[in-house]
Image (cartoon, rainbow, N blue to C red; front, top):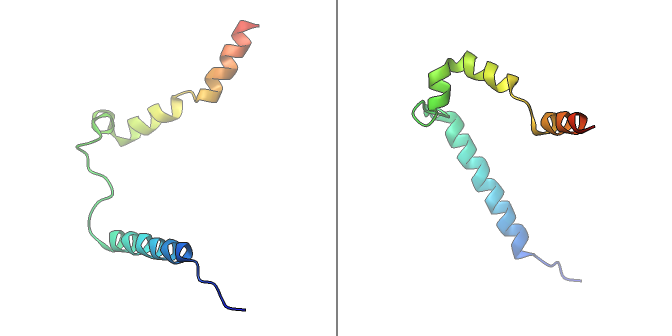
Length: 72
C-alpha cells in the first residue's frame, strides 16, 4: 500500500512554521507590542486607572443577570 501525502497537511505545517517564526522574530526584536498613540483611553486614564475602570465594568453576563432579576 502506498503512502498518501496530503498537500493540505504540508500547507498547515508550513503555515504553523511561518507563524512560529514570525512570533520568534517579534519576541527577539526591540519593537514594543503596543504604542501609546492608538490607545488614547489608556493614555488619558493612565495604565492603573484604565485597568481599574476595566475591572469595574460589568460583563455582559452580569448585565443579563441583573436585567433578569429586575424584571421579576
